[in-house]
Image (cartoon, rainbow, N blue to C red; front, side, top):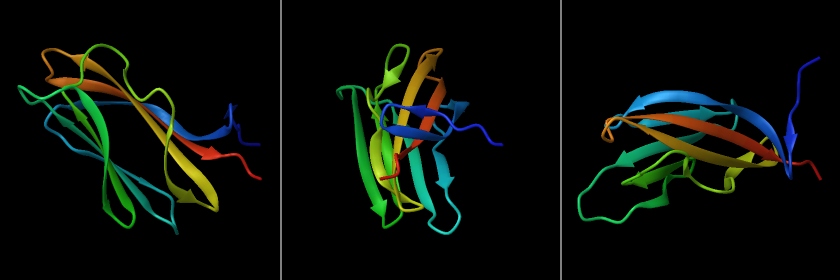
Length: 117
């Protein structure tokens, strides 16, 4: 029997950590029949405020753009809804831990499904 994890109003679909370089764009492809693409983009720009924004790209892709991230555990406080997977709402959260002088990041990610009604 497979392990299932529930937290609050969500079921954990997938979670983990990856190590990326600042200039690398990262793309998560989720699902089989209903493919959803979620991009992670990090921008370090002098003179711009620190921010996290979503940027819809196409019918099945949305990017999370982190501008001038700082500190440990920088990310969204609550999972953000990004679409539907297997007739359930799909949510994502990202948290970044900076390595060096904004040269690389350890990214913790979580993908969650809304609980079945």
